[in-house]
Every structure is written in structure tokens, then in C-alpha cells.
Length: 270
Length: 299
Ligand SMILES: Nc1ncnc2c1ncn2[C@@H]1O[C@H](COP(=O)(O)OP(=O)(O)OP(=O)(O)O)[C@@H](O)[C@H]1O
Ligand SMILES: [Mg+2]
Image (tube, rainbow over all chains, first blue to last red; front, side, top):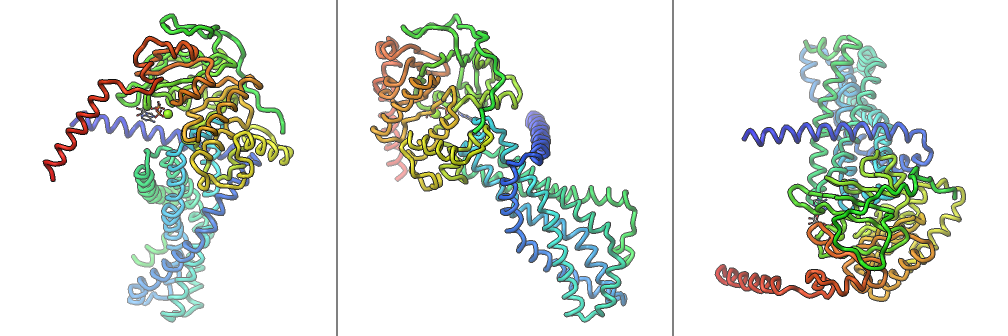
């Protein structure tokens, strides 16, 4: 019993160390390959796969989040006669929290899964060994372009999710629930600052890094066979999901400390 | 195409030692000046010992063939020569320089001298045949003229009888064709050392013989050092300057084809003649009998 616990702890620490090393190597390789022309086509291909094909998913997610928020919060605010403040609530939530987090979760599922499966298959069919055997660093060749593509694209995808979220909120509030459009926008403009948008985008960078590194790591260390690849994908998604939420929490605390701004939602509701 | 990136490997330091405890030494294969030297290499996977204090020196410009039963660790041995597996104990040298404890960058320079043919090919399935073959060239050379690279790809594919398949993807090739593309990729850079993991397995007899000729040609014309793992004794006799047999993680026979043919050890004799031992045969028969009893009692 104690033996099992002990060996699990040792394995846990060992794995954490291995992951840390991998993450460090990936970031170092990415930083180096920014300066290398020959990696640009690789990054470009990955951007196409990761970014362009994720846009529709992002748009749909954003729009529904906006609409749901508007519809769900209307009654509560209307009960207090504050329905014209709906815009602040929706837009701040979307831009600061839900846009980045949901976009990241979607990416973890869509892109992270694909990355892990692809790299896992490469590992199982010895393609990663083959890259190494030819004197090329697989982290530089495989991980760096994917990490860079994720970092470059996630903020852009978050902007899409934000825009559609705002659109969804507006559509529900102004068109369906018939709130005065002028009041809706003026309260929104009052509640949202550039800072909120920047916070959302910075979060996006962290999420993207976490998703890419975790997914690639799981793919690199995947066990043999189709079962191994499937398991690696599941583990990668769960790990990405949890780290998104944890990073989100950490960043909220940090941002708040950096810029101790009032929390419009709290002041409205409380 | 520019010059290949030269590794900083000092030549001929002659640091390798001939292990005293080697009982086997075939006639006609002399010299202790190994290009690749494995010294007391041990490799374990969990509890399983695959290589058990194995020592082997590969001579420059010669073809060494490694034979042995399936699962005895031939692939594992070959992968140690370019450090795709790290030994649990022992030392590995290339050109007199120790390579099992150097950092990745130095190792990559060493690896650029090697070509490695994987047992299952290990082609990049997202790249076309031509891109696969030019992969090492693109990694190590600054390409100035694409036409030269295309010419090189064509030349290497012709060598393995696959010119015209440039735009195919690995998924659309047969197993034997994939293996040959992988061979073309392994020789694309004109490496000094080529490690072949079962180069002729899965090929028809004629194609297999062409590959044998290709290996001989690379050795004869370019002075390539080769290490080939194989089950195919016909191929082994044809290409080998020296044959070593691996058994239970150790080398039990080492010498030229003649030496191996006349080897006194029964395990070696059974292997090269492809005969199953009496003991194994009995085991097999009793096992199948046991199965049928089991089956009938269930049904
Ligand atoms: N990555 C690995 N993890 C765990 N065990 C391994 C690994 N690679 C090889 N082995 C074990 O090492 C032993 C030798 O494997 P190896 O692939 O070298 O055999 P081989 O001699 O090449 O056989 P074959 O002729 O069938 O290719 C096998 O018993 C295998 O179970
Ligand atoms: Mg093998």
C-alpha cells in the first residue's frame, strides 16, 4: 500500500519533471525557429490546419454564448429594473472570461486532439525516431511549428469568438427582448475597457501554449497501438481542460492585482 | 547543394578496445579499429534484459550482418548504434569518440553521418515519396537549386526501382515499395554508415537480390560501412564480410560466412539451416494437443 503510494509519487514527480523539460525544450526550439526561414512553411501549414478550419466552430460557440447569456440574465436584471445594463454583463463576461475560455476549450478538443493523435501515430510508426535518426531534432521540426501556430492563431480566434458573442448578446437583447439599443451600447461602452480585451487576449496566449505543449507531449509519450493513441488523446484533452481552468484562475488573480479595477458584474448584482 | 554539415568528430583516435572476453573471432576479419564500437552494452526494458553486456566493433568499409531469432534484440542493437535507444550500461563509440553521453546537438551531428533503414520503413505519411527522400537533404544542406534535388531524388529512386513514384503518398504504396522508398531515403545523403534493419524482408526474391546488389555496390564503390540485420540467410551470405549471431543478449557466433556455416554450436546450426529443435517441436505438439482437449471440454 505505502509502496504503491510511494512509487506513484515517484512516477508523478518524474513525469512532472519530464513534462517540464519537454515544455522548456519546446519553447526554446520555438524561440529559435522564429529566426529560421525554413520553418515558415511548416508554421504556415499548421496555421491553416489549426486556424482557418477552427473559425466556424469559434463563430458558433461565440454566438450561442452571447445569446444564452442575454436570455438567461434578462429576468434577473429586469426584476431589478436594470435590464439596460445587460450589455455590460454580457460583453464583459464574453470578452474577459467566456470568450477566451470557451475558445480554448474548443481548441483543446479540436486541435489538441488532432495534434495528439497525429504525433502519437508518428511515434507509434517510428516516424519520430526516423526524424531523430536523420539528425534532426523532432521537437524543433514537429513541436515548434505547432506551438507557434497555436500562439499566433488563438488570439485571432478569440477575437472571432468575442465578436460573435457580442453580436449574439446584442441580437438577443435588442432584437428579441427589445431593450433600447442606445442604452444597451452606452452602458456596454461604459463597462468595457481596452484592458478587458487585452486580458482576454493574453489569457488566450497562455491557453494556446498550454494546449499545444500538453497535446504534443502526450503524443510524444504515447503508448504503442491504437489504444495507446486513443488514451493519449483523452489524457491530453483532460489535462488541457484542467490547465485552462487553472491558468484562467491564476491569471484572473494576477490581472486583478495588476489592475485592481472594479468588477462590474459584482457591482451590478451585489 | 552546399556542403554537408561536417560533424566535429575526431577521426581515428583509436580509443576502442578489443574486449578480451570475446571467444569468437572469424578468420579473415582482422583489425581492431572499429568505426562503431559497443562496449559491454546492457539494455533492459523493465525486467527484461535484451542486451546483456554485449561488445561489438564494426569495421570501417565492411558489411557486418547481424542474425538471430525474432525478438532477440537485433533491432534494439541496431538502434543503439545511433542512440535511438540509450544503453542502461556500457559505452558506445563512433570514430573513437564516445557518443552515448553527449548532448543532443553533438549527437545530431554524429547522426548526420548515418543512414538508417527502419524495419517498418517509418516513412512520413504526410509527405510524398519525393519529399520523404529529400527530407535529410533539406535538413542538412542549404538548397540552392531545386533541379539538383529533384535529380538526386530521381537517382535514388531509380536505385531502388521506384522512379516515377515521386508524387505518391506512402499510404498508396505496397509494403515492399514503402521499404524501398525508406531505403532510398536512408541513402539520400550519401552517408558513411548505413544501418539496415531487414532490408530484404517483404520483397520478392528478385527484388531482394537487387537490394543485395545495391548494398554491395554502395560498399564497393563508395566505401560505405554497413550493418544489416536480417533473417534471410541467402542475403546474409551474399552481402556479409562478417556475420554475428545474437542470442539471449550476447554474441554467440562471429566470423565470415564460412566460419558461420561450419560453426560447431547447435543453436547456430539450427538457425542458419532453419530447423526447429526437437525440444521446441515437442513443446508445440503437446501445446496443440492440450488446446484441443481444453476446447472439447468447453464445447
Ligand atoms: N520500446 C520497447 N519497449 C519495451 N520492450 C521492447 C521495446 N523494443 C523492443 N522491446 C523488446 O526487446 C526485445 C527485442 O526486440 P527487437 O525488436 O530488437 O527484436 P528483433 O530481434 O528485431 O526481432 P524481429 O526479428 O522480429 O524484428 C523484444 O522482446 C521486445 O519485447
Ligand atoms: Mg527487428
